[in-house]
Each structure stands twice: as C-alpha cells, then as structure tokens.
Length: 143
Image 1: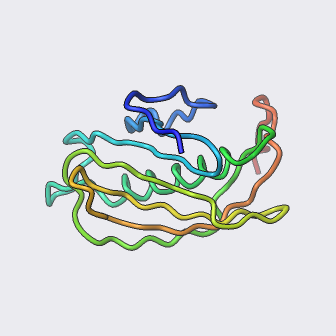
Image 2: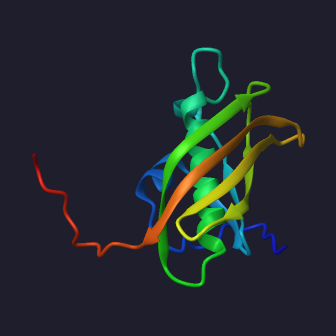
C-alpha cells in the first residue's frame, strides 16, 4: 500500500469534496485514503466535526476506493450506506476505505474515519452502482 504525506492530485475533479477541503492521500488497488483538516465551518454546535461532513467523507472515500480498483474510467453512485458513530471527531481526521466485493454492476465497500490519535470515530459500509462514466456534456432532462 502506497501512502504519502502530501495530497495527491484528484483523478477527476470532485467539486464538493474540494469545497469541503478533502485531501486525497491514497488511491490505488481498491483502497483510498482521504484526509480532512476541519475548520470551524465543519463543526456542529458541540464543537466536533458535523456528522454530515463525516458521512460525506465516508461516502467519497468508499467511492474512490472502488474507482481505484478499476482499469477503465468508471463512475459510481451510492445506492445504500450505513454509518456508525463511535466518538466525536475533533481535529484532523483521516478516512481509509476499501473494496470488499465487486460484481459486474455493483461494488461493496467500507470506510473508517480515525482521529489524529488513531482512534476510530465512525465506520460505514456501502453499496454502489458502478457504470461507465457519462460524457461531461450529459444533461438531465427537466420534467
């Protein structure tokens, strides 16, 4: 497993992840690691990282683990995700995700967020639909 101290280039721009300040630290072989150095804007009223930010970090980390295992440029969409919160996350956190199983159309993954002391803060499992990436110009029809 290849880990780095400096963030990697995102394999494809993920605007929301970049907006939240996520840093891609590992992306290979069915594993991904993403770091978050939270600011006050990431916190809830208890002065810990907001659960929504952590859920997004778990989701993005699992999706990147899935994409890192593929030889073609694919995308994936979350079908189902379950998270368990173990402790409030304070300070820098790192999510590590891995692919558990892959079928022709689905991928199953898990991710855990650890705090700076190496303690688990939350864990998630997810099911993802894997598909060939749609052209960037693709637009949804308005109903």
